[in-house]
Length: 180
Image (cartoon, rainbow, N blue to C red):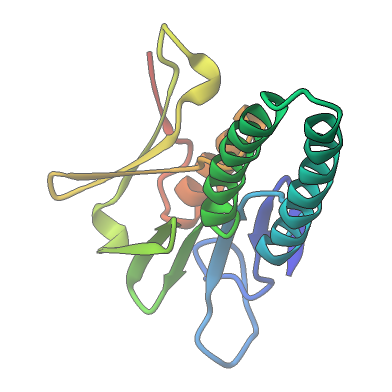
């Protein structure tokens, strides 16, 4: 697999994307995920060290007579724990789009919940919009049969444009539709 702008592409391409001499079922993959520097386990160990350090410092000040430091230290650790729990729940989120055997499959995982969409690739329309409010947040929209699935949450604007172009090319559409 080649890692190009957070888009992982399998080297076995479908004939619409280029000639392939691979004897098995040709397949095109795009895997988009967060770039996390800490695993959930490492976050847990980090949190435990902060709890211990905070408790030691707060205990010292409480021993010196400043008892109000303990509840504020507890509040600080509780808020940090909530933020780290949110981070850990979403650290393994990803979007996986693949094209094989006459189907375009989109799999999105957020906080452990998996949603899978299967489209007929001949009926899919790829759009890359530019909203007036937030042009950096617009996602690639895949339209088919009245359904719309938006992908590219983990890509920058250049990566989204590249994803839209590659999807359009592989679906035999040329360039993606630009929505203003």
